[in-house]
Length: 300
Image 1 (cartoon, rainbow, N blue to C red):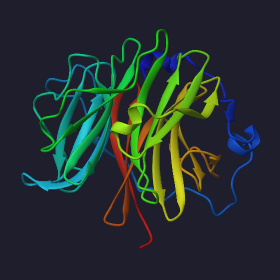
Image 2: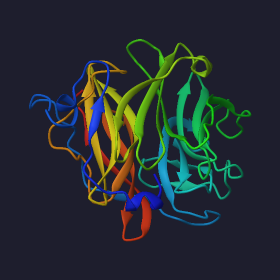
Image 3: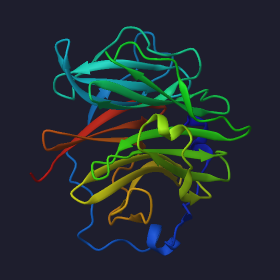
C-alpha cells in the first residue's frame, strides 16, 4: 500500500474464484455466528524515528525469549526505505534496533515465522519498481542468508505484501500476496508447499480478484476457521475487511460487520500469544502513518 494509492476510490467489486460467487464474497455474508474477534482499544506502538526515511508501516512478531526480550518484531517502512527489528516483553512497548536490517534494494513488508529455532522471512524487494518477493533464513534472527526469489518480478506488475503462513492442520506452508497494476487489476494470490523452499516452484492460483484496491492479505487459523484479512480503499479511506473459510486456499466469504477496522486502518498482521489475539496495523492520521496495536481475549 502506498500514499499514491489514496487517489483510487470506489466501492470494491470482488470476484472470488473456485466456485464461489461474488454474492458469497462481498455481498452475501456468512451466518451471524461468523464474526471477528472483539478487539480492544488501539495503542500506537511504532512511529518514525532515527535512521528511518519513512514511517513504520507493518510489524511481524515471533516469540523468542533471547537477549532479555520475549518478543522479536520485524517491521517495514511505508515506501522503499527498508526493514528493521524491534524487541518487546509486553507486545506494546518496543525497543527499536538503531540500524536497518535491509535498506538498499527497496525492501519492505517482512513476514516472519520461527520454525525449529530457525527464522523464516519473506519480504518485498524493489517496492518502488516492479516489486517481487524473496525469502531468507537465519539461526539467530540477526544475520540472514542471501535472498531466494519466491515470486519473480514481472514488467509493469507488482507482486508484494507477502504473508508466510504455516497451516497447523496440514503442516504445509502457504504464501499469500497481492499481485496487480495498482490501477485496474487487484488480485490476492496463494501457493503452498511442504517447505518454504518448495514455494519457489509451486504453482500459484488466484484467491480473490477486484477492480479497485484489494491488497495486504494476512491469514490466521483459530478453531477450525481461517481468517483472511485484506485492505481496501473505500471512498478514499483505508479499511480492513475479513473473510473466513474452512479451507486455507479457497471458498473465503465475507464476515458480518465489515470493516473490522476503518478510519485509515490497513495492512493488518494477526498473531496469537498466550490465548490472546494481537493485531498490528498501519494507521493514517492526516498525512502521518503509524503502527497501532489492539488485542482480543480468545477462548481457551
